[in-house]
Length: 311
Image 1 (cartoon, rainbow, N blue to C red):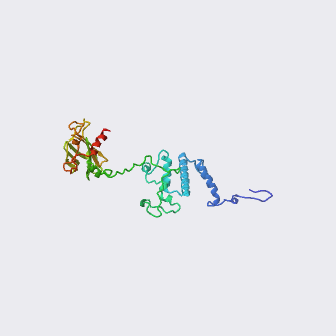
Image 2 (image 1 turned 90 degrees about the vertical axis):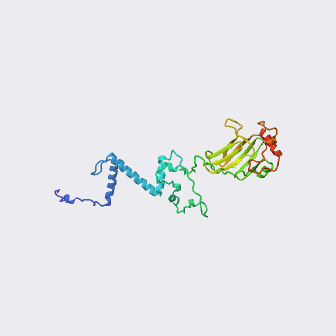
Image 3 (image 1 turned 120 degrees about the vertical axis):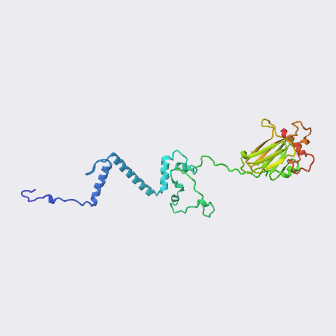
């Protein structure tokens, strides 16, 4: 265009093209274009994003922010798995050492057991497998929840029951002195005026179904399975075997899977009416192969057992 009188004129060649494409001043427009694409609005020279594209772009941004947050916090991969599991299923269960394997998928170590998490300050990790036998050994850290409370098992662990040795509370010398019974290595027996209590040692852990017990009026036989008999002896005097329907019959029971106890009813007893004197019911020995007592008659302690039975 030209003007009259002034002499000033300009053309298209005089218009400035602006900065180059790689100039930093264009970054402000790039951010504006990204914001328009995220909101679904068309950018400069672009098309409008679909719903799936917007959701995908939003997910990518959230994942990028989460990774950046994890990087800043210094979490390990196992700790991320553990926190993810707690967010999904940890609100309705109680997690402890005994049921952890039921709830997690794959390898997932809680932060309190993660060696990388424990060594955040370059602290040496104790050797928990070796036990507390070192000078600098530390106790294993307890399992805690998000509130810092120690997680305890729902049920208490079974108590370990330690059984004393068989017949450790039996005074064998006094038992023999009073002529009431005898304690041996394989068996122990004592008597009253109407009963004989015989305890036989069996292999520890033997179930009752494996025992083969045979009771006859003058013979006892005990074996485990098809093995050699543990006891095969003739009785010194007869016993009343009876039947299952008889309350006064002789019976046996297994105690602690290590001791077979016989409750033998004497054949000669005052209750049966086949003897007139309690001295006739006294046994000088339990088995025919056993050495009898030196006394020919029972002691006063034997008659005292009748008073205990009446009680």
